[in-house]
Image 1 (tube, one colour):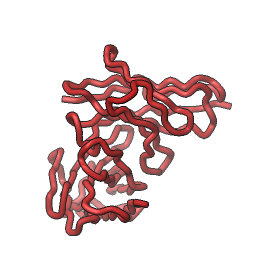
Image 2: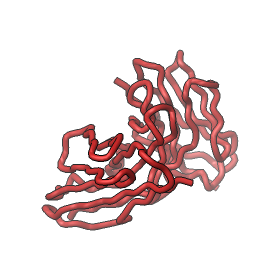
Image 3: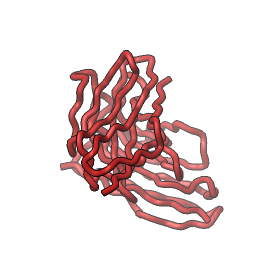
Image 4: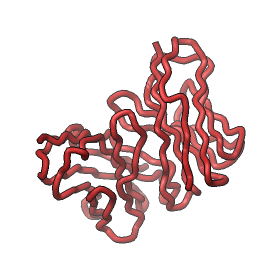
Length: 113
Length: 115
């Protein structure tokens, strides 16, 4: 069966520090991968998605970037965090782009102080 | 462009009562629609999805939703609420006619179940 792992689960970072959140999917190959953010009191917003290694699409302009160095690995990064980057970040995957369910990781709580 | 509106950020029901969470969507193409549940400090779990088959969709934990094109609605219901149903619920629509990973979410509805 397929599983998705995301870490760290929680982190507190000072403003201006770097960020790296990592996500891996097991039990499947060539998944579509996604990063979502849930800001406090708001719904989820798609940040990035990837249909293959090295292929990243950004949905909204922001202080973050994403990379996909391996087929089942998706990384969310920032060089300098802002207070507004605080939130709950969710990694997700689908088998392909057509009609299949999206599966979410357990999420990472980021607090920028 | 697609959008989702969830009416009511907080809904409170008594245990055993009917649960009704409202979702209206806007889409220029036939939508795929989803309901997700999020328990505290956890990721999202799919409750059910509509992908142009039967308009009445049954999901997990006794939930179901009915796709009504004329009303552009996809309301979530459960006949009898259980304490374990207390959580946040999100309605979502796909961006475009496919790609079920690119979702547009509503703002969420927090369901409170009172004993």
